[in-house]
Length: 229
Image 1 (spheres, rainbow, N blue to C red):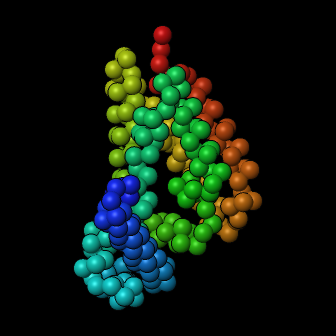
Image 2 (image 1 turned 135 degrees about the vertical axis):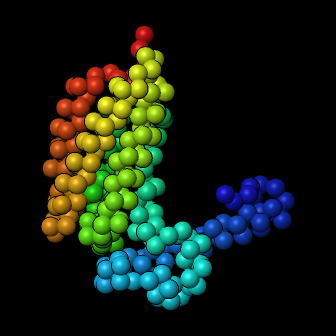
């Protein structure tokens, strides 16, 4: 985070310098990621080395590892930033809002802006990542563990923390239902994107499907996660 520029001139200069440095770091990370995805899409994940990615991105191999700890991170790192998203949505919702309603609203809002996390994105790098995950066993396994096991555990823990009854089983069942709903919707959106459909054309049906699917879960969970009198 850049330092405040409201102090003396030196602080302001330091803040601007930190801001510029951070932008350069982000640009470098993006260039490495885009280069890696393009190479993987062209030749396959297992056929491209980190050294080749570094050379194509015009950085050192060490620089690649400074930004991405493993080769798998080059594909899954950006996606895994969403693992804690369901738990965060529940944690930050208004107390009177049920958990299912909060996640319903968040997912629909993400669809409306074509968030890649919903699967409703026809941007070429996003499609390349989805294909890579489906076609590469090591990536598919890690994605499954991350977005199923880890996300479900984090959501269950947050639901349990907000449950006056403190029932771990209910929290785990609710988390599985909520994340299962998101997963089914996202996979269907990805399927349609990979088939060549345009995200803008699919949006109305994707929204209707999300409303229908979450309505089923909301009927089952009721006001679970909301503040009770």
